[in-house]
Length: 66
Image 1 (cartoon, helix red, strand yellow):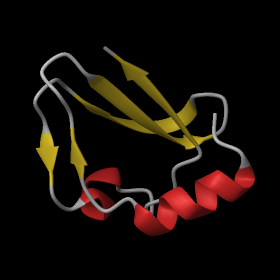
Image 2 (cartoon, rainbow, N blue to C red; image 1 turned 180 degrees about the vertical axis):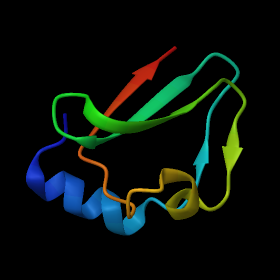
Image 3 (cartoon, rainbow, N blue to C red; image 1 turned 90 degrees about the vertical axis):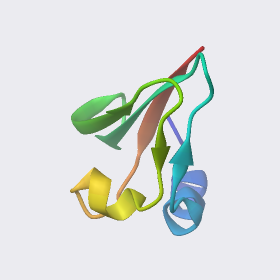
Image 4 (cartoon, helix red, strand yellow; image 1 turned 90 degrees about the horizontal axis):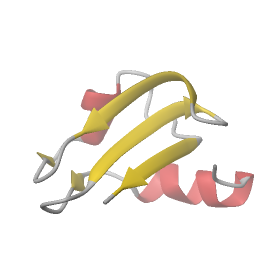
C-alpha cells in the first residue's frame, strides 16, 4: 500500500505500464488491495493507463508478483 505522498506522485507520473516476462501487476483504486482493480499479465504493454483503469486514474495500492 502506498503512503499518501507517494500515491499522489504515482498518480501524476504513471501513464503507461510494461510488465516483464514473469511479472504480474494488479492496481487497486483503494488502500489495502481493495475496491476496483485492473490486472496486467506477464509481458503486458499498456500505453494509455488512464483509459485502462476506468476509475479516473486513481491508484492507492498495488500488488506486484514475480
